[in-house]
Length: 133
Image (cartoon, rainbow, N blue to C red):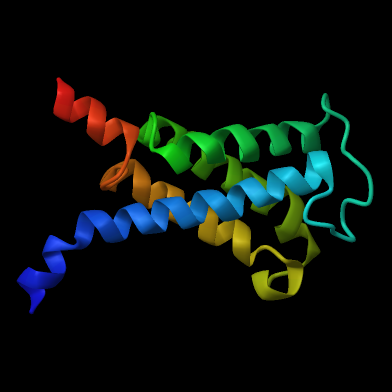
């Protein structure tokens, strides 16, 4: 059974990468385009602000992760970004991440950290470039 599951591992990693990226991009579009609508961002954030930088990283970094281009270095940057976001924005509000809204930041941080080591999986530009080389 484990051999059968192991054969699917690169595809499962790709699904994790793609779904994580889609959810991450959504956070950036909330900040810049108010889509999907959110009570936290009733108007677009200023581009040259800390939230503007966050939105940029979420959209651009999310798109790169989505297509699997430069996955490891982008995942490294995004993992650090999510750790900083948690400690700057959520941890000061209280100890329990579920109560401060920081649970998503923690999950994103560790999923991206995993991608630094695991790579993009199947169905990625990185995999296609490695195959062509």
